[in-house]
Image 1 (tube, helix red, strand yellow):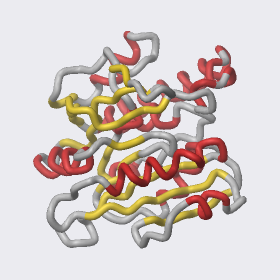
Image 2 (cartoon, helix red, strand yellow):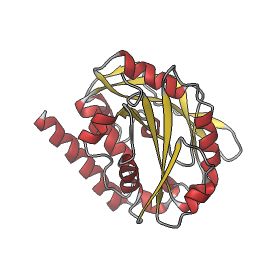
Image 3 (cartoon, helix red, strand yellow):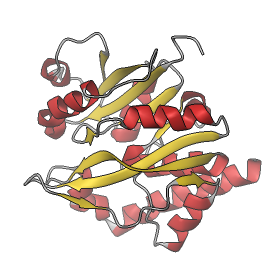
Length: 248
């Protein structure tokens, strides 16, 4: 694999409320010990055109900042994808933190078996007081066969047994599926269910992410839990999975 391919592009969409957490996300990236000849690039994308995200970040050649007219997280992530380089894409929300070693573990799993297209890790909820709690639905460490996640999602009132915010996947697979879904929320869930329909994945049992719980996060807003909107998001996601199953 050439040097250009040995890059993990870490994609982070940002809305104004999450800007204060960007330094912690950056620190968690800087703490990563990368395998020999591998590097990360951080593709930060503002959901808007104020320039406030660029001003909040340090000067670092590994950090690339872009902007787009407001379009929501799915549009913003996909706009950042235009700057991706390398074999792998890692998701990182602006208010979350990677744990030490997670990028090396992702690279090891995806580098060991070309039939594995994506990986997810264990996540802990990070509370405002600094405490953490575990997510109780983690599957056993190891391979997740294509289709398994959607069956679990369907059987659990459309709730995933793994955390989509921990996803790392092959860039070619992400591009082939068109990036993130253009939904007002659940765009990461939609992507994970799509990639897990067409490719086997891997669950890494070590903690890879601290998922911040705070009042300003999108999933804390009443609109996120609107029954009619949630039903619409679920239908589009399920329909996409069904279509991918038909065309394989």
